[in-house]
Amino acid sequence: MYASIILPTCNERESLPLALASVRDAMSGRVDWEVIVVDDNSADRTWELAQQLAVVEARIRVYRRIDRKGLSSAIFDGFSLARGNRLLVMDADLQHDSSKIPALLSSLDTAQLAIGTRYGALGSVGVWAFHRHSLSRLATIASKFALGIRVSDPMSGFFALRKDDFVRIAPKLNPRGYKILMEIVHVLRPAAVEEVPYVFGARHAGSSKLSFRVAFEFVLSLLELASRRIIGAQFMKYSIVGLSGVAVQQLAHRLFQHLLLPNIFADLLAVAIAALSNYTLNNEWTFRNRRYKTAATWIKGASVFLAISATGAVIDRALGVYLSQQWHWPFGVSMAVSLAVATFWNYNLNLDVTWRGHDRP
Image 1 (spheres, rainbow, N blue to C red):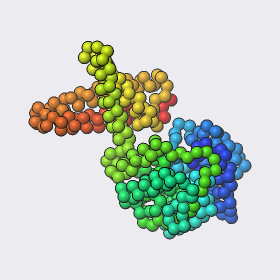
Image 2 (cartoon, rainbow, N blue to C red):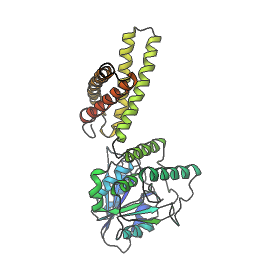
Image 3 (cartoon, one colour):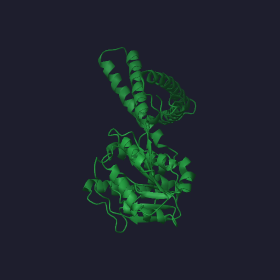
Image 4 (cartoon, rainbow, N blue to C red):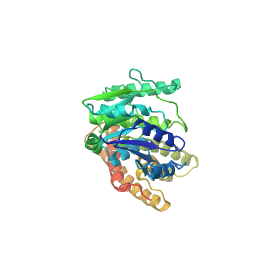
């Protein structure tokens, strides 16, 4: 057995040496193992300290990610780089009980997936505040209900699986947000799962990554998996941005009317502002991993986006009129269908044309 232990880090300089020491203690007496520190270009230069430690300890490997962030994608990248035939991920903030590492790895002798659980027998979340405990339990219940996941802690960030299973399901994974285990369970559908209870420890340093954005990303991920990717989370983001554009357009139009601009000019300016708002939000949120960063590329991307939006507007209007006048559909139904078609058209073109590259300069 050769084990690869993945430590995703982001501003964990204080706790990293202690986390590595705890892993070393847990793996004492075992020959074949490595640690891969996947750092999201931490502002506190965690990656630099990890590189220094790697010079002393040959088992440590470091991957510093410059233009890619997020816990799930860090775990995915770490698993992809791993040399071992058994993979395990744990936090570097000392909240996961490293003494359970051998039990998790050994469980893979008979199980496809081994999960460190806070909710099984003898497990505990430790000294969490009531609101965080409640949110975690609610998310666990929601994931079980929506996805039919039969494990006690599908939100765990402390788990292990076999490398060959990961390689097999990797093309079907969409590593985004903070809860990749939920997706792995959903896609892998393991025949056997072993749960290893542990007590969630207190954070040694830094602060929790839990935020409204993280919670929102979880909801999108849950909806995406529940719909079996018929409607992807990225498309849902694009649609939300589109709805925000409708509100921006209405507000801008009223403002220009209040300023006594002719109606035609008020319409054109409002549409232009809404389109630029949509482009900016899509660039920074929907397609963030492909976003334009420099002024020149931003303007180029905006030009393409506006051109595609214009074609979508023509499709929306023409199809709506055709359905209502030729097929005699109710006006509201015609408008809803034409808007949906135009949205799919715009989304796919923007995905394949406007933001077709990755990590643009």
